[in-house]
Amino acid sequence: MTGFAAPLCYIDAMLSKGLAIFVVLSAMAQLPASASAQAASHSGTALTSKPSAAGPHTTPAAPADSAPSPFPMKPDCNGGPCEDQAPRTITVQPPPARIVWTLHERILWGAYLVLAILGYAGIMMAISTLRKIERQTRIADDTATAAFTAANAAAETAQAALLHAQVIANAERPWVLVTAEPARGVESSFEITAINRGRSPATITSALDLVLFAPDEAQLPDLPDFSPLASGPRFVPIILLPGESATLKTFSREDVRALCDSDAKFRSVESWDERIFLCGKVAYIDLISPAGKAAHETVWCCWYIHGKLRSALVPAGPAEYNSHT
Image (cartoon, rainbow, N blue to C red; front, side):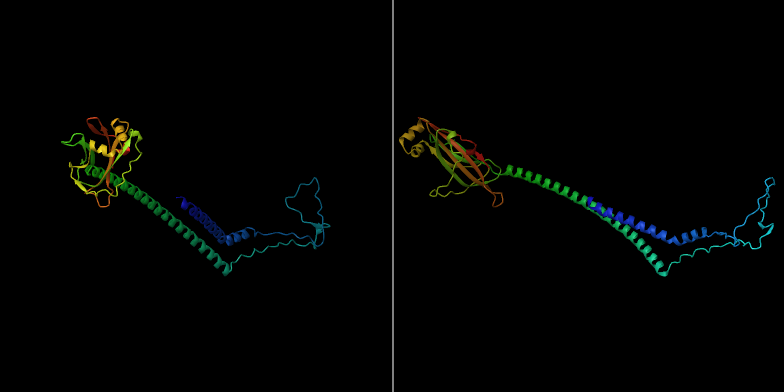
């Protein structure tokens, strides 16, 4: 925990300082006793010899052949004792005066000692508090990490459940497909039919179609423009149950003549110099889906093959003209 490194270093420095003060104060408490002991150790008897008032005197030397006396000879003056010789004196130095602390100094020393003890106790309490805070912070971090991990696991579980629900919904939703089938009883006539291949009912809300002339599929526009006609009839919604179908449009050879505005254009269609493409888009909604959900779309495209005697209508066009949502 880097957040506690600086406070702990500061507390350690304060603790060392408090211990140093405590040691100094203890040494100061022992100072009088040591001073007294030192004074007592140096209070020995000092001997001081003073010179004689009568001045210097000489002691007769012993004969060289005589043996030294084990006892020292007293000095004499012309063979007799010196009466005016001053006696030796011994001076005893008085012991040094004992250091006496005043009441103010004792109170001050006691106050310093109490402050050092209180400071040491406060430092120890602060260190203990910081360690508890560090442990609680570590526990909180571990709890937050565990909660974050649990939240991520819950989010992943929810995402998996959502995907599973989406898969089930897609499996149960309606799928409206558009096919071109020959009309019964009418030769060279075709029906554009929408059929529900899904597992739930669908409601067709709109069905738009257009006719395009192009030499081949590569010459078609990139995206078809399915703009509804302002003067066209209003589309009536169609409900399709699973497996049901509905006819959206019919097309026959007679419609080709109506689409060609000139004989030259009609002859180009007959000679396949120009082709006719029937395109359309069907929008439908799922009856079991909540309100406001976007509608599904099916885009289809067919190529009308105009023969001399008979005709055909087959699927054609790029992927943009054949899609499902």
